[in-house]
Length: 432
Ligand code: NAD
Image 1: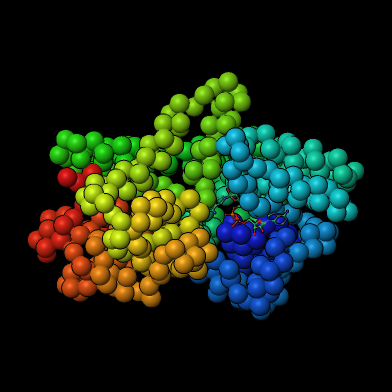
Image 2: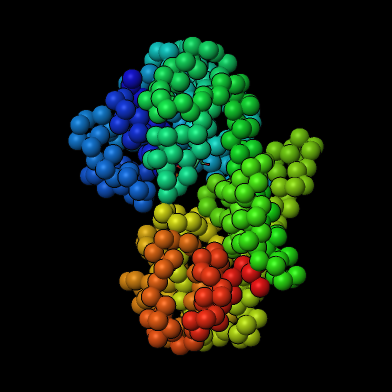
């Protein structure tokens, strides 16, 4: 099938590459000409395991191309996916400027029947809005579909190729069947497709992210209480997670969630609630507790040292979670800025997010070539992202390199008793 994917970011590039990998002819469109140029040269601008190989193979075999020319891409395609960003707007509701612009451009470019598929995460009702915009610019027929994306950065290709489920919101069964057919190569092992209306499909995406973010926050709240009453949140997590009604995923206490999705999607839901005269008090509390979580961590460091002026801190992990270079809304940014503003010095290491960190912090922090280099002379180590490489380091070397062997473990990666036995002063989350 001939497909266009408009917006070649984390979602659009993964979707485009994976659809090409299953034999479709895919044109990925982006308004960022620099991004398109580097993709044409085979350079994948994001870190996503397995993606460069798929992009390279499909470009070489002619199934995957990149362009800034949306008109031509739409005319050559039967199905057009919209995967542009929907960043938070000033009132918490997503800024739909890119979605609207793309809808208008699709409408103007339409020369015959198309299926238009919304993959971006958009508030309930946006499918109808987009259809109205397209209709205002064309008299050609089209079908509108909502097909929210559930991939996780860091495992995006795997998630796309082996989805837990596909959600297809449609008003027309024929169009839903076309999208279902596109996903057939990825659902052969039995992943179900949920067929529903557009508004419900849009809501499924938000409800899923809100629930996951709430689980994380629930555990952080318990971690904080564990610290007060002398319980161990990691054992609480295990004890709870074994209950089949609860399950073990997304129950890890830490410095809180970040990233480009959870914070913005929950803010969007809160805005939807407000607009519909139904304040979402549970989700308002989730955002509040989550914002406090990184501040609590920073306060732990500040209250241990008193004054951090002139002190040197090593930071392991900058991305908002492991296996991605994405630092959007990462806890590391607020924690590092909190220390910098009080006169501390930071040297940091992340396996993949170093360029992004350089873009964000410039020369305000020093970036190390590996995780040991930044320990040299450090008053303490702050572990902020649970990359695999930090799980089993050479603790003797760490102790020898640091000025004082103090570890603030923001992800509960290490065993508190072992750390203390090895001579570290150790602070975890909810593990007093
Ligand atoms: P992104 O910022 O990585 O990519 C968006 C791309 O769209 C950028 O390359 C940008 O240049 C391009 N773009 C913006 N305006 C454009 C226009 N008018 N024409 C053509 N291209 C344009 O965003 P993302 O992380 O891929 O997210 C895209 C959508 O998918 C968002 O709604 C997001 O909430 C949702 N989503 C993201 C994830 C994730 O893990 N990143 C997961 C599921 C859903």
